[in-house]
Amino acid sequence: PTLAQRSLTAPAMRCTATPSAARCEIKAAAVPPAARMKRRAPSRRAHVRAAPGDVEEGEGDALLDASGSTSEAGALPLPPVGSMVLPFAVPALGGLLFGYDIGATSGAVVNLTDAALSGVAWGPAMDAAAQGLLVSGSLAGALGGSVLGLTFGDALGRRREMLLAAACYIAAAAGEALAPGYWPLVAARALYGIGIGFAMHVAPLYLGETAPSAVRGTLVSLKEGVIVGGILLGYVASSALIAADAGWRLMYGISIAPALLYVVGALSTAESPRWLLLRGGEAAGEAARTAMGKLRGADYPAEAAEREVREAEEALAAAKASTDEEVGWGTIFSGGYLRAFRVGAGLILFQQITGQPSVLYFATSIFQSAGFAAADEASRVSVLLGVLKLAMTGVAVVLVDKAGRRPLLIAGVGAIAAMLFVLGFSTGSASLAGVSVVALLAYVSAYQVSFGPISWLVVSEVFPARARSKMVGMATTLNFGSNALVAAVLPTVQQTFGQSATFYVFGAVALLALGFVATSVPETAGKSLEEIEAIFLGGEDK
Image (tube, rainbow, N blue to C red):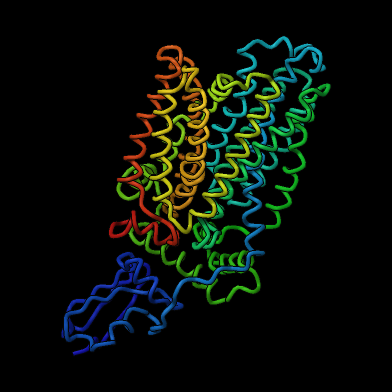
C-alpha cells in the first residue's frame, strides 16, 4: 500500500493518512540538522516515518519535501568579500569606541589631575575616590545601557539600537570635551557608558545574525580585535596628548569623529533579516529577503540568499509551533533556553573572574620588578601589551573557523591556568622577575586566543532566536557587573592574601573554567544559527 492522502498544516505540520496506511508523523521541529542540510526545497520540509512497505524505496526522500523536490544542496557559497565589509565595520565601530575610551581615560586622568596642565582648578583637587568615580562612570553607564538593551532591544531593532548607541557616544564625547566642572564630566562619562552598553549588546546580535556561517567566527572574533585596536589607539592618543595643556579635552573629543561614522554606517547597512522575521507581520518575509539581498550583494546567488531566509523562517515556525506567546523569563530559565544561557553566561563570567583585568592591574609592578621603572618605560609597556593583545587576537581570527571554538578555548584556558600558577610562584622574587614577565605575556596571549574573542563569539551563536536579544542583554549585563565586582573586591583580596596568593586564587578559578569549557561548551563552528539552536532546543517544545 502507498500513502493515498497527505495533508500538511503549518506550523505543526501534521501528516494524516488513510486508514489502510501505517501511522505517519510529520513535525518540523523533529527534523535533525543533518537532514535539513541535505534536503532543501522552497517550502517547509517534514520528517516522515512510515512502516516498511508503505513507501517504495526512493519514495521517502520525495515525501520529505512538501513540494516534492528532492534536490540536494551543499554548503552555502561565501558572499563576495566586499559585501561583508559594511555589515562588519558598522557594529565593530561601536567596539572601537568602547576600546578607545579605556585607553584614552588612562591618560586623561593623569592630564586632568596635573595642576600645570589640566586648565581647571577642580581637576587637581580630585581625591582618589573622585578619580575612581570618574573612571568608573562609564562602567556604571554601560550596566544601565545593557539593561536598556535587554529590555528594548527587540522593539528597537538592530539598526536603531546602533543609531542610539552612536547618539550617546556623540553627545557624551562632546560633553566630556566641554565639561565645565567635575559632575558634568561624570554625567558625560555615564552617558558614554550607556552608549557602550547599547553597542556591546547589539554588536554580537547583528554580527551573529548577518554573518555567513562559514566566516561568522572570523568576523565576530575580528570585532573583538577592533576593541583591542581601540584600546591601543587610546593609548597612542594618551601618549601624544598627556603633556598638552587641557589635553584631556581633546583625548575625549577625538571620539566624535568615529561616532559620526558609526551613524552613517548604521543608516547605510541593512537591517538583520532574522530580526525582521522575528518581528513578524505580513511583509516580514519579503523585507527579510530584501535585507538579505542587500547584505550579500548583487553577485550572490539569489537561490542561496533565499535558502538562508527560508531556514530562518522554518526555525522560527518550529519554535512557535507550541505557542505564539513571547518567550518569558520562566521559559528562559528552563529547558533548552537555560542550557544555552548557562553556556553563554558561564563563558562571560569566567572571562572576567579568571583575572584578566586584575592581572593587567599588576602588570606595572611586574615590569618594574624586572627593571622597567621609569614613567616613559611604563608608557611603552602599555603600548607593548596593546600590540601583543591585538596580534594574538589576529591569531584567533585566523584559527577560529578552522580549528573550531572548543580547541582554542581548551588550549587557551589551560594555558591561562598554568601561567597564573607560574605568576603565583615567581611574583615577589627578584631572581624570578624575568619569569614573571614571560608568564604575564604568555597569559595575555592565551587570553586573547581564547576567552577574549571566543566568549563573545559563542554568546552571539548559542542563544535561541526568540529570546536572543534578552539573553545577549543578560550576558552583557553580567559582563559589566562581574567586571565591576572584580574591580571592587580586588584591593581587598590583594591586601588580605597578597599578590602571589591572588594569582593562585585566579589559577584555581581558571581550572574550574577549564572544566566548564570541556564539559559544557559545544562546538559551533560551521553551523548555522538554526542548527546551533537545534542543539539546545531540538526535540522539545520551544
